[in-house]
View: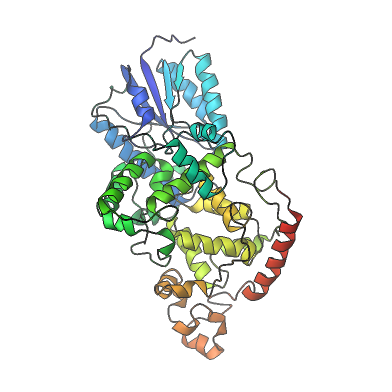
Length: 491
């Protein structure tokens, strides 16, 4: 058994890829003579069928930035590759680790993995510290304040947060760190070294790393009136250069931006502005949505699936791989839907109202496919794919949980007409429609054959015909939803 008197500490980064407001980092450096900051590239996660090229590129860029910031403070990041437990055990034995520190995580895979890490540390005689840091509040604090029964509505959750009070203040960034031990590692790999191909266009849209995260946050909070006026549903889903929102969701997912730091700066901006928008539509409101979904996800079995999920309505979805593939690849024949899905495939992101549109279309609106299938596509392709938020939003948009007004369906034709930029957005992501006249752009199948030839876009050859008739599918699916709600069956 390794001696517990060793002052060496292994700080295991997973999320929380930052130095500002990092409870795990502060715990790790207390009384540590030698610090080993480590990230493990887990082959259960880092593989092309699970992880899109944009998200992996964002992760690798964030790790490079983290390593640079550690080096500025006298330390460095060691990147290991392999199954977490064998890699962790080898490192702890070789480096004579007396203390293992990692940020707490509530996702099911992480909960199992971290239990194994605690058991390993126990066998090796090492102390384990696992403070929170991914959310504004410790989920256990909110659960206790709720008496063990978390509210499932935003209004109820807001009352719970008000009862608990303001979240803890952010922690300062350490100026110096304990020296890192001498370690030979392979460094931070490239996409190609990990078997990934393709161009990560999303990095231009959302640059990775803690410095970029803080700069992007500053660009917003330094304009108090912009913060005060922000109401997320009023932003434009067709805006792409630049986007109409903060683009900070990926930094929140990886923890290159602290939720508490962002919250504190937003509150300061609101005070400076005076009158300001309010939750749920304000920027502070967006952080509370994230908090709500993460906290409920932490205590709900099977949160990312329909079967066995106690809050999820059981709906008899179809299983049509051809329709799912057409949706995933942006070839449904509905330009608004296809442009959004092409943006997702190209850049790893889309506006939240575009996400609403495509999620409704896949599930209760048009294609009647399971929200779980859509969630899995988003989980693979989105840079900002957050397990709990992604699952909750898919339950919401499919009217399986949280939201129950299933008769409110996003039209793939009428909805984008609200936005003057929709035409530019569609032509940008669907260049085959570049010459289609404005009057037919959302419904190109209505062009005559001569008009199609003139536009250089023959329907069925250059751009697909619609996979369903929206009006027919909507009416049929409304009847299906009524039947599912009448059955009243939850997981």
